[in-house]
Amino acid sequence: MSDVAPKIIEILKKHMKEPRDDIGLETKLEELDIESLDLAMIVFDIEDSFGIEIPYNANEEVEDFKTVGSVVDRVSALVDAEGTPATA
Image 1: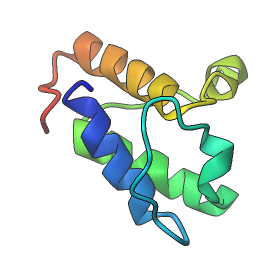
Image 2 (image 1 turned 180 degrees about the horizontal axis):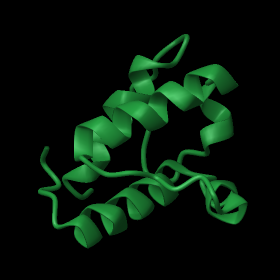
Image 3 (image 1 turned 180 degrees about the vertical axis):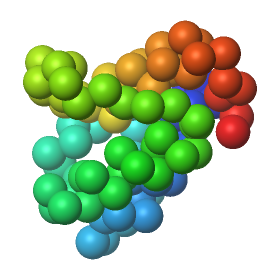
Image 4 (image 1 turned 135 degrees about the vertical axis):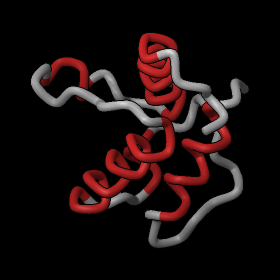
């Protein structure tokens, strides 16, 4: 896993009703029992943690977030584009 992945997983666990220890890159987001209101908080936490802005203007990008790995890939790409250290 990249340096981004463990931080993303910790953020997801923080917002889960019942955090799991078996979350990996292939884990589907729909399996994580995260409420829609918590999803907004997750996005804010990710943005703050990595010093990035996740664009919401493209609905297809949000729909691409099906697995933990897809979130990690997108955040990694945004971090690379911003030149922000991934270990923020």
